[in-house]
Length: 195
Image (tube, rainbow, N blue to C red):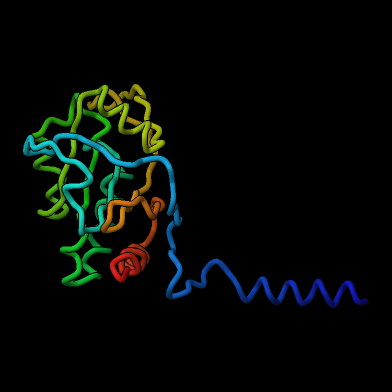
């Protein structure tokens, strides 16, 4: 009898802490504060200017790895980021979105200059050599692999799908999962902007 009472109490406690509840001061994404990986990058942007994380000090940086021929994950993620940033209002200007291509062979600077800013004119694409791309992806523990395809593009790229967020001081703080809702993106970025 006493054991059933404890089980019932535990069940009530668990129901009161459902994953759908979000505290105002808790991140929806994964808090990776203190992570020892992904400490930076040095890659040319779609204008040809070499960019480093320190170039954006004072802003939040949302870093996403993908490619322009991606049929679903990449455009969806960039669109969700755009909608999430819109919810921040004027504070949107305090966030820099960076898109690192995993397909430097096809994603020319010209192609990236058309694709990435089409989601928002302030977004920047980063494009390294295949070797730089592999080293940068590895430093962020990003998986990617080319898959032959019968489509007209000839191949697709399987890749990790999430957004890394750095705080204003350049410290890696958050991992936004693929499919995180725009309002949850805005919530998480808003919390970091308050720091």
